[in-house]
Structures are given as C-alpha cells and as structure tokens.
Length: 268
Image (cartoon, rainbow, N blue to C red; front, side, top):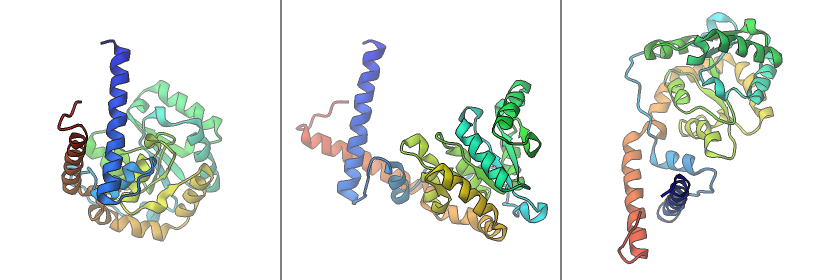
C-alpha cells in the first residue's frame, strides 16, 4: 500500500468514526451536534480530560491590584502569533496605555527569535518596551509565573489548549476567539466547559472590545481569580472520570450499532 493510499484510507475511517460518534450522541443522549460544536458538546455533558498539575502552588492575588496596571500574557508557540493576532494586540494595548504584556516560550530563548519578534511587534504599532520576553522554564517555575499575570490573550486561528487549562488552574482566565474549525475552537470549548463562556469572542472586533472591558474592571477580575480554581474543579472540564466512562460507553455503542448493521461483522 502506498503512502497516499494509506492516508486516504485513514481519512475515510476517521470521517466514518466522526459521523458515527456524532450520530451516537444525537440518538442516544439527545445532544445537539452541528459539526462546529462537537468537542464542546462532548466535554460539556460528558466531562473533560484535564487533571490537576502535580505541582502544589496556590493561586496568588491579582497582580494588577498592587501594580496599578494590567499584565497580559501569552505562552503560545511563536508560530501561532499571526499578523492578525499582533494587530489585535496592538489595538488592545493602544486602548490601554498602561497595560503590559509577557511573552514566554522556548523559541524566545534565542536572540534571533527575540529580534524577529521585536521587529514584528513594531510593525503592528506595539512598543517593545511594554512587552517582556522570556524563554522556557521548569514546569514549577512556569506555573509560578502566573502570579505575575492578570489574564491571557489567546492566539488565533490556532488557539491554545494545554496552556488555557493550566492558566485556569492558576486562576488566570484566557480571552479567546472561536472560529469554525476544531483547532480554532479548542480554547472556546475549554473555557465554556469551565464556566467562562463570556471569555469567548466571535470576531476580532469583539476580541479587542472584550479585552479592554475585562481589563477595565479590576475588582471583578480579582474576584474571578480568587475562585476560579474551585470553579474549574467543579466543572465538566476537570471531570476526567466522567469523561473516561462516557467515552468508553460511546465507543462501545458505536461498535454495537455498526455490528448490528453489518450482520455481526465489523471491519476496521
């Protein structure tokens, strides 16, 4: 079998599984699945797969209370920092003259990446003096850094997943923008499952407006931070056991349905 043929076969099987999975949830559990909200529907009703980090760090008070200004952050791979993202960040920082930003990822350990990122920031009207750049850190130090961050700004169209959940655990919500593909909706799914649907924008204009509005209400942001870990733990996002049990049930249901339609023979 050639590589092309193998890939075509895998694509067909993947599409088949997606169709069966969606159909199973619609028929057996009365979930409205429209092609865009599959992941969110599954997580919201059946639980997530997020576990608490193995690092014991308490949530710290909102740094803006002591600093007097908002600190945004993004811990995403530099490849996700599209021109559209930087343009939106430029508008946000222009609307909030005292706000600052922290960028941190493994690529920023290198001088070339730092210079390139600095040039890109300038191209989008962002003063590099307002943006602190850091390279990689140990897991414990990385999580501890959230004590210096008020809120995350997500990338788009490719949004964060792991970083979004880790930030929630440390009391830091992420502002995201939802698109029409899975990679564009991971952030929205995680945040909605954690009870943060109001942190999901539907357009670049709304993303900019929401960032400014949220940053302008420091007491509300501080209150959210103080209870966010407990809120997340009680939400579907962190209910791994429920997710495992229901996913197992879903797979078994697909197998049984396909088996009954094919006269007992199921071919993979």
